[in-house]
Structures are given as C-alpha cells and as structure tokens.
Length: 201
Image (cartoon, rainbow, N blue to C red; front, side, top):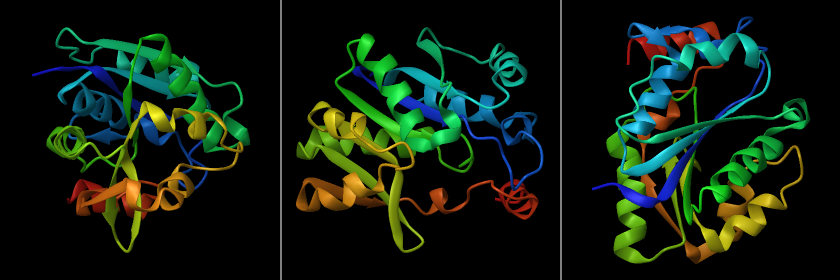
C-alpha cells in the first residue's frame, strides 16, 4: 500500500570531489547510480520522491528521464546553495516535499546503492507501528541516513546550519528516535575504491 503522506528526499547535490567525476552518473547494474537510487525510492511505499541536484545538475538531470515511476510523482529540486553544505540540500528537498502536503519524509543518499526499497519501507512501517517520530538507520558504529522524520521535526531540519547534516537532530532527540539496523547503508560511494566495493555488494 502506498503511504500517501510520505515522500523520499534523495540527496544528490554534491560535486563528487573524491571520485573525480560525477558519481551520480556511474554505471551501477546497468543504469546510472542516481537512477538506480531513484527507482529504489519509487519502489518503496512512499507516494513520491524529491531529487535534490546541485553540482553538474544540467549533466545529471537527463539520467532520470527513463526511471520507472509506477504512477508516483517525482520532483527535481535544484539547490543553488549546494556548495555551502548538506543542510542546504536537506532544506531544498524538504521545502519541495512540504509543498506536496507531505507529513513524513525519508532522507536518503544517492550514493548508498545497496539500500533497498524494503529497507525504506521498514522505516515507514516502524514509524506507523510505534508512533516514533524519528526512525534512523544504524550501521558501522554510527546512526544516520536513510532516516524517517515526521513533520514535528521539519522545523529543526529547516533550521540546520548550511554545513550540518541531520545526524545532530537524531542524536539530540534521544528517546524520540528509534534505531534499526541497516548494514547496507555502510557502503557509500565516495571514492573509486568504494565504487568497486558497491559493485561487488
């Protein structure tokens, strides 16, 4: 069943400094990495996806054209402030999601290709089952994305400093955050070595 009030915000605005080329366009299982991430998000229970682009947006946007939408909405939000930090991309995506009437979001990264739609659904289901306003992934000794936030935390996300991610909000929330294991999220593609690991995952 589609969760009509929830959306995935797919963060893909970085300039891939350590990769040396736009990682959003790397081939992953026969399609660009970003399109793989988008189709994963679209297979989840969420009603739609906001894709946040920044660096190289003009070159990257066409890679989304062939994605299978399955009747769901996709909105591309370009963040002109991407170079200031992830906080600006979270805010650009959240503002777009709010305009759609979204009351719950999953923040996800385009460069965690082993994360599945089933994992995203686990976040939504855990929120629905427990009422916890934050459901975060834990892996490799840390906590972070993908992470579900209900609307009561939107204000804190919109107040992030430009160079802040959402981890501080998760940690500061204490017992309001449910943590579930997501070892797949430990693989993120930042370097050519990471890319090889992901392809073998």
